[in-house]
Length: 104
Image (cartoon, rainbow, N blue to C red; front, side, top):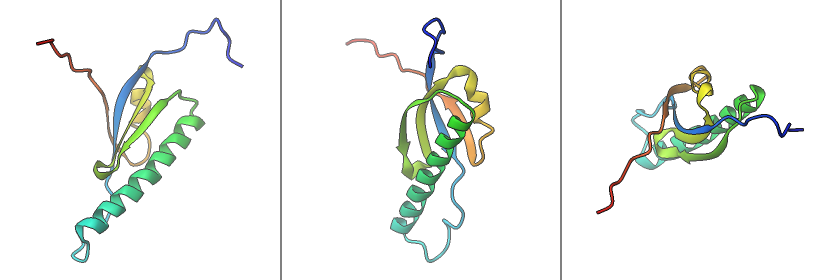
C-alpha cells in the first residue's frame, strides 16, 4: 500500500542499448534472418530487464523497443541509471535529453 505522504521520485527517459546477439556475421545469415534474430534477442532482453527492475524494486514506466538496434526506452528514477548499467547484457544507458525547438 502506497503512503500518500511519500514523494514519488521523478522519472527520466533513458535509452538502454543491449549487447548484440552472437553469430550475426555468419555467412549464411540473410538481412531478414539477422533482423529476426536481433528482434527476438531484444525482446528477450527487454523481458529480462523488466524482471530485474521488479526484483530490485525500481519504478519504471513506458517501456518501448527499437528492436532493430537492440535498444529499449523507458522511464526510471534518475538515481537508478547507474544501477541499470550493471544489468547483464546492458552495453550502455543514456538519459534522453529533450530537444528544444524554437517556434518559427
